[in-house]
Amino acid sequence: MGVGPPAASGATRQQDGSEDDLANSQALAILDAVPRYEDCAFVFPNPKRTCPLKLDFWWTRLRRSCSMPDLRIHDLRHSFASTAIMDNLPLATIGKLLGHLLPETTAKYAHLSDDVIADAAQRISGSLAEAIGLRHGERHDDQERPSRPFSSRPLAMHPIKGSML
Image 1 (cartoon, rainbow, N blue to C red):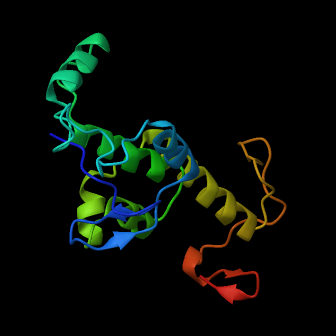
Image 2: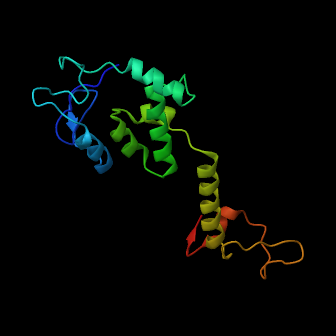
């Protein structure tokens, strides 16, 4: 595991060898703070500055100090994708950020949290309640009935805001 030269200032090298300017301001600030050698293109060179520094030793120590001895670099990518999903970013956007060529690759490990699913269900039910004339959060129990009783027609036949379901 090594860290090679940057693709270009602010650019990231994709799996197919192309470059995209996807680096964010936080990442660029960190990279700008790393001391560089004029005669070396590597961000983290080995002591002789002839190749990237091998991170295996440091990565093992870091994982142990964090009590996460089994953590893999890929796990960090997975966490990135999951966080992006929970922030409601589209899969296509996340896939582009991760350098995926196919949306299926991103969808495989971008799992939704229960909170995101619950929030989506709440938003959808709120929209449906509003569409049938209920105020947001309004509930009807056995003592309080809607002023207009529901008909026996299927819901799909009820007009909602001038249209059919």
